[in-house]
Length: 311
Image 1 (cartoon, rainbow, N blue to C red):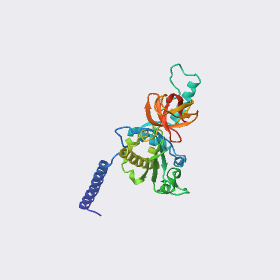
Image 2 (cartoon, helix red, strand yellow; image 1 turned 180 degrees about the horizontal axis):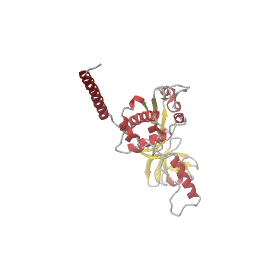
Image 3 (cartoon, rainbow, N blue to C red; image 1 turned 90 degrees about the horizontal axis):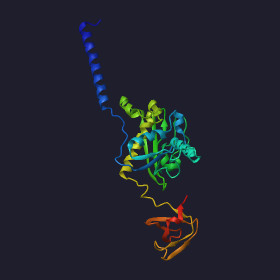
């Protein structure tokens, strides 16, 4: 049987433990930092987010990562986002109504108004095994990066609560891969607890609620945030210019004409041009005249009224 003094010492010890625990909790709370989406001070270009071919997210009861990445893109202010998913499908229905004469006069819905994407961003998993199965699933990265790059890490693991993802940014005009970055996250990265509430708050409205409401969803979201942060840092360091870095789109002759040495019909004729012949603008212009080259390397001037954009 313990005496009064022993009970007093025991209570004091328990109180000390409680104080230490409370102090540690407060310290951890102060150290917690909410995840942050990187922000750009200027636009880099127009971006379309496209989901990968292999729908790996279905196995984990998650929404398409396209919805998740759109949240990042919308908040980072680095790109102007164009919708090539459900929004485009809805827009096409409106255009169909307009072309069928169902819209009111002056509705101003028709061809030639859609903004082109400068870049396409594909969110996928990094594939470690050629035959992924069990609790680990790899993405369809092989077609984007090749066997060597696609064998670096290992997708999503339910057992270890880890995720390895990849973001591929491609120039639409040249099809060049501007950036390929990998992201990694694990369960222990979710140490910010309540501090992550604001970060995940906007996911539901964007159709990506499962990335906030499930543990594996949060891990995948953090892996994509890791990759997206690296992507933004890379494009900010070496800012691409999809329009300036690419040559002008080729054109075809819609009407027969001639290639002139100068922007003047009285100048020397370099050659005759037949309907359907493809030409490559150099970028130089003089009024309606465009300087072009043909498939043989001949250069000269042609009135732009004679050709149309090659399809």
